[in-house]
Image (cartoon, rainbow, N blue to C red):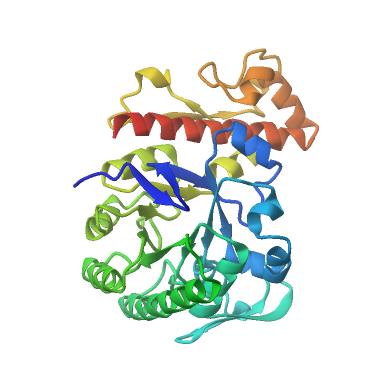
Length: 366
């Protein structure tokens, strides 16, 4: 395997691997664009379905696209909304229905009643209107409890939807006369069945995309990262194109997935954990980490623990983030205790910088 160390987009060259935090609704909660830049975040993932619901694609388009809307000059990846099949419709039929044409949602992303139709074509149109740099085809993401027949249907539907997405993508480029169009990625499904994964990958490669994603649930029945199926899926993707491990996000899993070929990652873990008082710190000096062979790369500090009430030290002695350079564990403990919003901001800044530092280490070692 030849590991891809960079790729070009919008006349920019981006180093790999890379991690994108989830700015689902156009925001990393509690942070602004300067916080992201200072934490060395290079791009974020937004969600087409959620933004279609509120504020609406027409609002974002009228204001010059998602980057101007957010005041963000980094990369924007737009998720198609396919995962909402799993998290909403497949888990609760009152949210909508799915057929070969697309998805009909009976409620918006906040649960408010309303009819929203998402087809492969409409998903691509929305992502163009949002102004994404990388867009992802609408895919059929079945439940974690899906049967073989469910996965077989998912693969068939995902391939067909990808074909329709690519056709719409080409129409949009032609109509808009784009000289530097966004990239389009497709999602490989098939559950834990290697034959289905291979069939899906082969058909998607025939259609032709700029990159390919691992789709579906990355955990096995024991709740552990399923490296067997992740590795198999990575092996099916072209080595000269980006390989996106959708939803894979804890530091150890990122390092292990880089080792098997993936080079793009997104996950809610560092931002969500920050809001729940869980802060990531490197288990030892990052300069001494054998990144691909360590059993433990990071560990948690539970900042609300009583032992931090009087602790004058920063969250991590190895961290150069704004939080660690200016505030103590004692102060963060206090902020969370009084439920001040600054607690979220400072904790999130730290966790994101830990992730971007992880990426820097990985880039030095691939």
